[in-house]
Amino acid sequence: MFFAKKSKGFCVEIGEHSTLLARLAQAGAPFLVEELKEFPSGDTAAITEWIKGTDGKGSTGYAHATCGIYPAKRIVRRHTLDLKKIKEPAYFSEIYTQQFRVEADKYTIRAMNPDDGGDFDTTKTTQKEALFAGMPSEEIIVAQDKLLELGIYPERLELGTLATLGGMVNYLKFKQTKAPLLLLEIGEEITQSYILSAEGVDISRPIPSGVAAMIPVVQKELGLKDEESAKKLFYSNTFDFTSMGGSLVKKLLKELQSSIGFYEVQTGQSIGNVFCTQLPTTLGWLGSTIAGSLGVTPLKMDMMPWLESLNIKLAEGVSPNPPDEHWAGLFALIASYNPTDGVQPVTAEKK
Image (cartoon, rainbow, N blue to C red; front, side, top):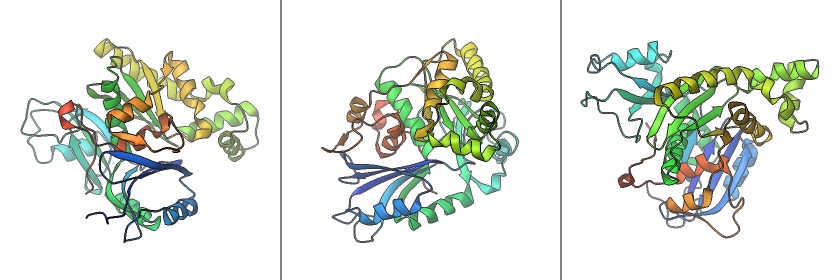
């Protein structure tokens, strides 16, 4: 579908807590960002109002956009394959059922190369590693319907995790960073943990511990009457929780140290930085707490030179300028990568 002559480009990232939007001067490169907006994901009225009021929607009245979503039951997993079974028709379904613990027929899943995000080729039988990415098929329909209700037409719909992973691999390559990066998507119930290098996704692991596991600790430490009170206080940004940070992330930390220890023994490399995404701004301090507990520093991105390398510029007056790290996933969605630079984005096609 082609954009109407006066239409702009739009990019939307809908996370568990926050929704980020970008309005672009045009749909294709070079990308000029005319506006950046952030809303709580639950505030659908505010998002809809902004979409209705913004210019450049074209003749349909919808903002035609590239959209990244983060469904709770998403799968992004690196897996070592059994080359003896790779040609068997049911082999991948067996992996989904036995390793990922999902019903294969209810998921849309794609196999990719973990180094460049390209399609996995089962005819290349020497390749033992694959990156599987997917989500429940019915959630794709739900996401599309939700976007349409907001006034957004998804020209492309993909797992935001994949765009972020591809973008961060590209960033590590751009900065010529040798040390691996620990990337964490901290959700309500689950933390998706990844170790990345400039060569691609090295390790992926879902950890069954997220923000919800921290609430009982808050209740106990502060002597609050119930978990609901603890949750409201935790998200309110009216109390400094940094002093009890170590206690809050204790369970998560134990699992992360196990993954990191395994990786360092296998590769001989130590983690360089930690990058936490998908946290609401009121819980941004958690990233620093986790990094400090692991003895490494939080990632501070050199954002503007990286965006320039991706042919992305901010128009005069765009705020925030420079944008901080939590906008990285949105910019990774906007970017179009040159396949000849050796790093392609890890993205999922709309099914």
